[in-house]
Amino acid sequence: MSDMSTPPPLRRVQLPDAIAAHVRNAIMSGLLRPGEFIRLDAIAAELGTSVTPVREALLQLRGEGMVQLLPRRGYVVAPLSRVDIVDLFEIQSHIGGVLIERAVDRIGAEELAGLETINKRLQSAVRGKESAEIERLEYAFHRTINVSADSRKLAYVLYNISKYLPRHFYSADAQWRAAANRDHKRIIEALRAGDAAAARQAQAAHVMDGRERLLKHLDAIDFWETAQRPG
Image (cartoon, rainbow, N blue to C red; front, side):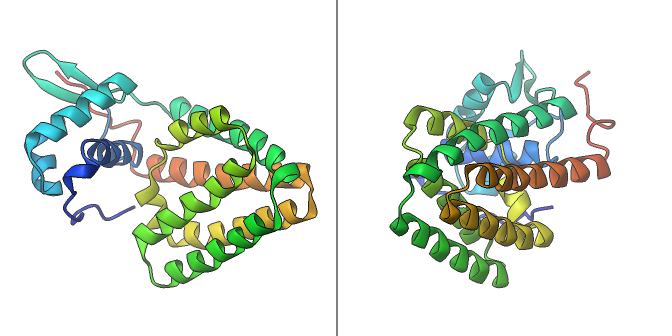
C-alpha cells in the first residue's frame, strides 16, 4: 500500500487536476472508501494548497462519478464495486491490446531502442525505490507504444481509462516493480519479433497482473464489506 502521508506541495500549475488524481488514487487504492466523507480542509492541508482548487477537483470527480455531493453535508466517495474494478481493467486490456497490435506494424528501431532505455532506467528507479520516477517511466513506456500505433483517438480513450489506475499503489509494491520489468522485456521482445499475438498477450498479462494485485489488496482490507454508508 502506498505511503501518501507526506506528498510534496503541489504547484498551482498542477491544480486542480493533480488534486483530482491524488483523490482518485486514494479511492482506487482503498485509502478512501465508498460512503466515506471527504474533508476538503484535510486534503488542502495534506497537499499544501488552499481549499478552492480542492473544491474544483471534487467537482471534476463528481462529473466522473467518483464522488457524490450530499446537500448541506459535503462530498462522499461514490459506490465502487468489485465489478467496477474488473470492468476498468478489462477495458484497458482490450484497448491496449488493439493499440499494441497496431504498433507492431508501425514501431521503428528508434522507438524500440527507446523502450529498452526506458526499461533500463526503470530498473534503476526500482533499485532506488524512486516512486515518482517509476510512475513517470511506466507511463513513458506505454505511451511510446500507443503513439507508435498511430491511433490518436483510441490512445486518448485509453489515457482517460488509465487515470483510474492507482499508480502510487503500484509504485510502492515491490513485487509489482519486479514484475513490471519482466513484463516490459516480454513486450519488447514481441514487438521486436513483429509478433502481434505475442505482443497482445504480453500486454494483457501485464494489465491483468495489476488487476489481480489490486483486487487482492482490496479484498485483504475488507474494502467491499466495510464500505461506509452515509447515514
